[in-house]
Structures are given as structure tokens and as C-alpha cells.
Amino acid sequence: MDNKILLVATILGAILLVGVICSQVQPPVADRRGEARGELVDTGRFVLEQGGVPVIEEAYTLFFSPAEGYVLLSEATITVGEEATGLAQQYQLDTDFVPTFYHLGAETPSGAHIFSAQMGGAGLEMEFLGAGEESRSAEVPETDNILILDNSLISHYAVLLMAAETDAIDRDFTAAVPQALLSLPARLHGPNSVEFTSEETACQGKLYELKLGDLSIYLVTHTGRLAGVVIPSQAAVAYNADLFPQGIALELEEEPEAALEGFLEEEVSFESTGLTLAGTLALPEGTTQPVPGVLFIHGSGPVDRDGNAPGLKMDAYRQLARALAQSGIGSLRYDKRGVGTSDGAFAEASRDDLVDDVRAALAALRAEEGIDPQRCFLLGHSEGSYLAPIIAAEDSTLAGLILLGAAGQSLDRITRWQVETLARMQGMDDDEVAETLAQQDQYIAFVKGSSGEWSDYSVEKLQQTMPWVNEEAAQQLLATPFSLTWLREHYQDTPTEAIRRVSCPVLILNGEKDLQVPAAEAESLRTALEEAGNEDVTALILPDLNHLLRNHPEEPSLVYRHIDDPVDSRVIETVTEWLKQRSGL
Image (cartoon, rainbow, N blue to C red):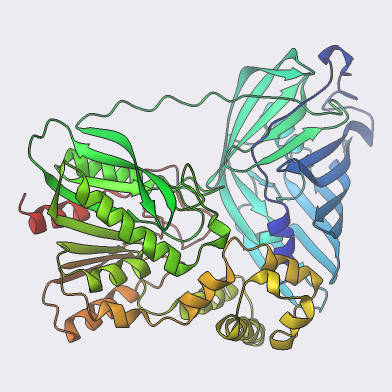
């Protein structure tokens, strides 16, 4: 849908800020709780850069009236490539910072969109109205302790700090995001004193940490005003250009990692199709005999050895590897080609390239002195559950196969299920869902019938299969981190062909709250294996488990995934016990 353009374009990121001399910064325009009717209490201009490129510029003013409360007005421009989207905002809150009305108009290349919210008897009612008169709505039942934090408007963080400083909102609150028609649990920590630099001059300020769903957002203030926004999981810059026209620079201290015992880790490298890939070998501490070994095979995307991708710190593979080592089982996990310290270019990698890398990694694991080559296992998560069976089907000496968040259907069918599921969660009616799926089917047909890479296609060529593609949609397709070959190979594959040739013991573990792979795929895989004659298959669906292997007691969501929580202990215990049984420990 068109409104996804805004969401993609405005992801915030880690801040590297450069600036002006602190003594030149002026104090706030007026007291936060001005007494005059309609008094201007704050004004400013924020600039957000991503990868050093300006993405958003927003100018805002905030007024306060004892009778009406607060009114935030702003205009912003989002620029992505050659495309620009204009935003105009009106946000009203009562004197206690309770949102009463919100209106955001977005003028995109494909037409005007309106995002709105207002407080009603059932809570905060949000609505999206698209250029084609399509509309969707959602409700947030809370009527207090709620703030709007839309992802493209930095001025909302300034309002949040005012509300927090006057104790008008609890530090644990609900954040409403009208652009996405969803709400997220949020918590504000701080402030703590912080030092940042401006033109190499030290400046003193305050640092707040905002936990917004999965996201850690750091808010930097100076002389009581918001000076910058830091989100370490992304590569972006946001700063108050009125206070610091050239930005500010801030370094966040990383929390020391808790000391863990019972394992040893060492850096290793191996060769694959002319590239050097880097990884980590984990071994039990104090062992003198070779131990069983597990090779971790990543999920999709530019994922490193620990399972982390830009903007997504999952850390699941490291947690699992260390838990296995503490139980007497070694492992190898590695950075994908073109990721971390591994050679290559991820965006050019095909699925076949990734399979070659798995073969090379398995050979490297078996060659390690501390690993028993006769007791080696593959553990594939997400996309890894497609790749691992290919190797298991051709290697009869494997001791076992573990599939987490696994699918038996080809990737095109899984992505179609994702699109339909999310469309219905967004409140689309049957006609809108059918229209969305029709576009997805055209996209699938294009990928399956394609040749070469994205760079070989113009907008006109794309439109031959996908008539709905305009310049804006084409830019999104061309910006995908996956090569067209990677997609084509996955879409044309029949995963059950490899699964049916797997004869080693298999553990399949899926989550009930997984929105990326249907939980029922676990049973489909079990059936395919057993029908082919495999007599050692265990398939489990864990309640309240999501795709990133975290406990998720709420309704399924792709936004709030408990990433800061450890990997669900049920996953670690199940995998560990299964491996110990199959390796004779």
C-alpha cells in the first residue's frame, strides 16, 4: 500500500552528530507552561540524516493555552532518492498532555494521504485515508497515559519530554503510531548527565532512553530543549538545527556484557568460492575430547554470526551457541558473505551462493580439532530452514538436523501468506485484500519469469508484468537488499524435494505467535519426512513463541517482538536436550 512508502522512508537511526559552539545556543523560547493564551512555548527545526544523507527536515511550533491546551504544528519533507513527500501536521493535546486530535496530511507522488486520530468514547480512534479513497482504522483503548509518536516527526519527542518533565504521563505509557495504525508499549528512562561535542567543544546535557517496542531511542537535551535523537540500531542522524545548525556528536557507552562461564570462543575463518568468511567457534570449557558440533545457518537478510542485521539485534545464535557449549556441545556460527568481517557483497549473493557457504562452513566445523566430525548437526533458522535440508539430503553422515521457524512451502507461498495476514490485521476488507493479493501475485509471476538482476529492469519492463508499478514503487523494488537471483531461486524451488531425502534425525520447532512462517508448517514438514520413511522426526509448536525465538504473550505482531528479552528458555532447553540425546551425551 502507498502508506508503506512513508514507513520505509522514515526509519530513525543511530546518531553521529557534529555541531556549533555551545555558548552560541539560545535558551528556550518561553516557559513550558506559559500563562498567556496561545503563547508560543517552543519552536525549532529538526534534520534527520540516514547514512549521511538528509532524509527528513521538519519545522515545528508549539503553542499553549490554559483553556485549550497544547497545539503542535509542523511541516516536513521526506526525501528518498528522487522522490519527495510533503507532510503537514496538526496535533492537539489538553492541558494534561492527553491527545485530543491529530491530523497528518502527506502529499506523495502517488497522491494525498491523510492519517488522523481523535479521542473518543472507546479510546483513541485512528484512521488512514488513501489517495484512492481507501480507508482503514484502528483503536487504542487507552484514554490516558498515551501519546502519539509518529515515526516521521521528530517534534513528537519534544512533546514527550515536556509531558514527562511535568509528570503528566507515566514513564510506562502507550505510544500510538497513526501511520501504522498500531500502538506500542513504551518506557522512558532518565535523565542522566551526558557530555556531547559541538565543533570539538564539550557541551553538557541530559540523556533519556526511550524503549519503543523493540527500539531503543536516546533523546539528548541541552538547556532544557531536545537537541538530538539517537537510535543505535540504525545509521541515521537527527538534530535540532536551530540549536546546532551543523549537528552534535555523541558517543554512547555500551553496557558491559555479563560474565559467563563454561565455554570458550575463538575467531575462525574459512574459504568459500574464493571468499574468506569469518566466524566464531564455541567449545565447552575444560574438555579434552572432541565434542559434538552444530553449524548455525542464518535467517534471511544481511545477518551476522550472532543473528543480527542492520536495525535488528536478535543475538539468538550467540545465546544458543553459548548455552550449547555450557552443555558440552560445540558450534560454529559465521558472518554471511558481505556481512560483518566476511568478504563479498551480500546484495549480489544468490541462494546457491549461500548453499555453497553452508557446505564450506560444515567442512570447516568438521576440521576443527575440538569437534567430533561424526557428530555434526545443522541448525537452520528461517531461511536457514530452506538451506539446511539441501545439505542434509546430500550428506548421509550428518548426525541430525534442527529447523527453527521452518517452512515446507516455497518462499513465494510464504510471502503471499504474510501479505494476506498483515492486510487482514490492518483491517482491510475482502476486496482490499483481494486487490493486495492480486498485486502480490503479479510480483511473484515477475520474479519467477525474470532473468538477470534488478539493474537489468526499467520501470517500463517492470510494468509489463506489474501494471501498478510507478516510479515510487520501482525505487522500493530496486532498493531491496536481496538480489533478484536470490528471490528467483527461492520462488522456483520446491523445498519438500530436499526434505523428503533427509534421513537423519530431525527436530522441527515453530512458534504459535510467528507472523513470518505459519506455525502449522511444522506439522507439514513432519508429515513429508515421515511419508518419505524418516522414523526419527520431532515436531513441536510452542505457545507464545514468535519468529525471533522470544516469548510473546501478546497478540502476534511484527513490531513488538521482545528482542531485548533473552531467547525463550523452552527453545534452549528443547534444542539442548534433543542434541544431547542424539549425540550420546
